[in-house]
Amino acid sequence: MYLPRIIPCLDVRHGRVVKGVKFLDLIDSGDPVELAEHYAATGADELVWLDIVATIEDLQLATDLIFKARRRIDIPLTVGGGIRTIEQVEALLTAGADKVSINSQALAEPALVSKVARRFGSQCMVVAVDARREGDHWQVFRHGGRTRTDWELGAWLRQAEDEGAGEFLLTSMDADGTQQGYDLPMLDFAHQHIHRPLIASGGAGSVDDLEQALRHGEDALLLASLLHQGSISIPGLKAELIRRGVPVRWPI
Amino acid sequence: MQVAIVDYAMGNLGSLQALAARIAQTAVIWRQGELPHGTDWIILPGVGSLVNAVTELHRRGLANPLERAYRDQIPILGICLGVQLFFESGEEGGHGLGWLRGQVPKLAAPKTPHMGWNTVAFRPGTPLADQFASEPAFYFVHSYSVLPADPEVIWGETEYGQRFASVVGQGALVGAQFHPELSGAQGRRFIETFVRRVVA
Image (tube, rainbow over all chains, first blue to last red; front, side, top):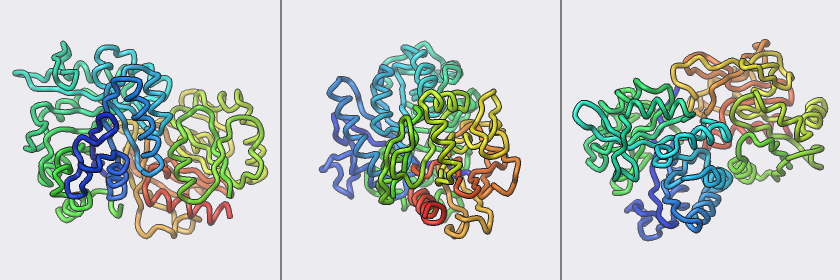
């Protein structure tokens, strides 16, 4: 039986965790390798590591940390944030990332998606998309949601799949940070345009939200602030989902 | 024990090296030429399509030594593209090594690649089956799957759009369509059992 993926997101800047898990004091320790290992050991199905690779020094720092993390975790790892070139992709994959996630640069240079897919396989090419509702449709934004693009969501998803995207990470800017539940209408719309796996992001605030999205048919959910607050852990979430009759991977 | 991990530029090897370290195996990367001295078993990994895989094995001079290792019954664990290489031919004109009879068709599922955790039903009586209490979940990433001509080589099956062989084995040759190195504790158990039952 295919089991949904519960995917914690690590937010990393200059080698430090930006938002850690409160009850573990990981905000203070700030070590992303430690946090990654903790998530993997407690039942995360996969990890997304978002780092801003703005300079050569950032890239070196990121690859060193990912190399360390790879040796301590035994689940898949996607790394993204500020990737602009195929050389950066190669450095991150060589360090031990299983997939890379590209957002803004894919919009600026869609051919980068096909280059990565041809060279390393589409299975490692995750296209991340940030979108917001505008009247009767959803519009794509870049630069962390700061810049509006000319792309309508469905058109961009189709284009990215044609370029070789093996998976999508779709964030609803409307739902993100609200903790009011995943943006199911936007996710339904997105699925109509693609034949690839999709990780739903934005809006998770409680077990109810996860249950609702999974029952609705989503099969990969990104978790960020919900875990960072420290009020709930991955085993806690999974145990509760199982108790409610929603199958997830267990034992971990 | 020493494991040689075949490197033919079809995917990175960091997670396999990490796995080898976790189960106390000495890992050597086999990039070209003869099988590294002292090798007890081999991992044939890889992601992607069969089309270029055999060409790349030949280009690096790995194909013939690998064939000899197979004939000498050195245990070989094929992972993902690696298990697909055991078979005769793929759907898009690519050829495998032909050690097991059968094809590698595209997976008939609405959403590919098949990416994520899925359970494996081990066939009772096969060498790895009794190590798992219920159907364990492993991490998959693939768009093609193996279709053995001989059902006897199927050690485990998985459902995704269709039912497919997710574990195959014959003698010292064992293949998994999933990635044990990315499959947490169950993946480790799978490899440890393989080492104990097939290699040792």
